[in-house]
Amino acid sequence: MIYYFSGTGNSLYVARQLADALGERLSPMTFPPMTDNPVVGLVFPVYSWGIPNVVESFVSKMKHILKGKESREQGSFLYAVMTCGDDMGYADKVLETALGRKLDAAFSVQMPNTYVCLPGFDVDSKELCKEKLAKEGVAIKEIATCISDRKAVRRLKRGSFPRTKTYIIRPLFNRYLLTDKYFRVDAGKCVSCGRCRKMCPVGNIIVDETPQWQSHCTGCLACYHACPYHAINFGNMTQKKGQYNLLKLL
Image 1 (cartoon, rainbow, N blue to C red):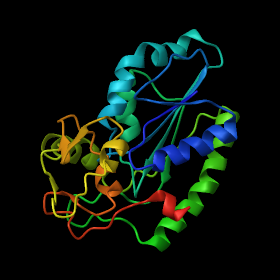
Image 2 (image 1 turned 90 degrees about the horizontal axis):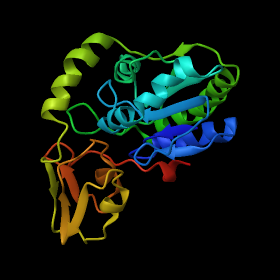
Image 3 (image 1 turned 60 degrees about the vertical axis):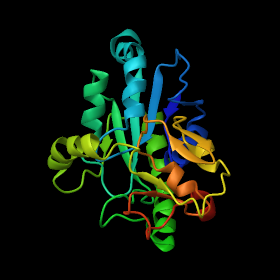
């Protein structure tokens, strides 16, 4: 069983390829069924060098099952595949703290950047996106082999200053920027198409003439990237930033 969370589609893309390679079933973390499969994978994006609050909620609900596999089932294997634009810090350590156990294997996979809400952050060029996607295909084959062989490995791109990023910057980010109160809608561009509502993975948007956020945002920016008219912005920070559409790159 592979449980996944995905906002803009990168992690779902990876999860589907991994499921095909391993012959495993997929399930969203937002509606997780129980499983008696001794091999369980977790696929999700790295947010601010840590794990999304959706993943934390999933782990809280499934913790007794995921932790119990460590000692209860012979041949059990718990692994995580984390997608990131550049590096992932100590996101695996944050996950293990939430789980209350060590992962048997952990991997990071570079995918196109989607975070645009701070200065210096923007989507990758089309050329760089395609380069990352080409490397991702090779990486998934290698990861699938490691999982099939039950290799206890860690193939992670932590980046520079990972401890600072995960344990100092991340708490500040979560406190001040993990919020939907800064989203703004240009009423002159919005046509109330509802695409933002449909793409939100946590059901945080209703559309009443214009989108209205409901204060349980996970910070994925799916609404921003999905708007066909660039009518949604995060404060003034994203007005001149690009949008990401995975399907147009495939």
